[in-house]
Length: 305
Ligand code: BDR
Ligand code: CA
Image (tube, rainbow, N blue to C red):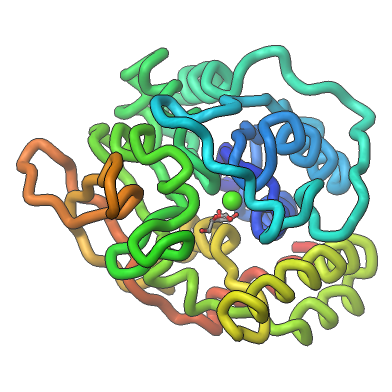
């Protein structure tokens, strides 16, 4: 049976990679999209997630989530990375259907309680909704597994110390790391080494003109960011790597460590190895088979399954 997942997301170009991959892969059963501010505003994230679900004819609930972090003032959205409307230079599209009436946190709690032990929760944006869901119903810690994109034991991207999803709400992220769940962190230690050059996206467009064509268009903006900021030719495949880790953990090298997040100051957003005996060990992905991880993503989009 396919693995049920909820993706909590701020789409976002690599979020779109992750969502379309999950919708197409036969071993994943995407049951809902819950959305969050981050790459774009909360309103744009909800709209874009609904549009993506309709592109693949998925009739699933899509909820709108928090529009700001738990404690601190919001950072500006990352429009220089993902474009003003979230998908590079592509213009905004309006979905046909409507957004679920529940908040992202409420939808997460409801779905996990309807299918305890059956859903993997996959946050690939800031962790505010997940912290709010824990507050609504702490029992979800025992009823779900978490595979998330964020953090880095030895790397940052928005600062030398901090990864964007953690940096956008470090207080929420720390609550998520402090909770008692089975958690896998797919962070920059592995994702920043998985780079798809423009030729990968051109091949997607050729093999799958509609979905691959859309991803190819969006990826052009993302690739320009990586070239101008890091002199890298291609896109770092952050969010799709987390989705691959749900199905193929054997492609990743794992270090087990407790983690805490620096809430403020110069190191704000850093994910640090912690020796706090009250914190459960996290499976932190510190490396992986970069080409094989990328191939799982590319082949799924190319073949539509
Ligand atoms: C993460 O931040 C966002 O910009 C991406 O969508 C990804 O989730 C990478 O640091
Ligand atoms: Ca994201």
